[in-house]
Image (cartoon, rainbow, N blue to C red; front, side, top):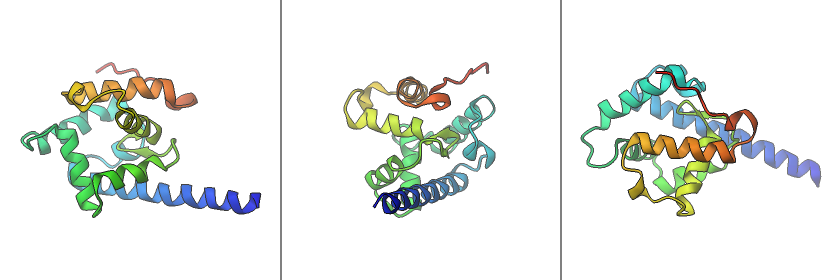
Length: 152
């Protein structure tokens, strides 16, 4: 029985990692940033490039640019936004999505789902990023919880 459970866990992690790859490919096409900035954790080098690509492409979308990117990814993958979030939550926290450990993204999604912060409080991309990093520093294990040094 334990062997079967282990196979199921590995299979779920593998399929979740494959899904993260799909999301990163969609982001690559949508944002047009260097692929390395999506699949490696290097906020010092990539955070500004990704933020600029989001603002450049979605500045006039009628919502926070970051929200519009999420909708664009969901549309690209033929998913509802809730399904996109649900599938991302299942992945291994150490997988990199949009240049950050999935654990960071997952803790931020959970922060919103549990209403510990409201979308109205997050009126800019900077506030969204700060909330994500703050929550990840508490919730993510080991090196995933380490805050990046951002000397830009």
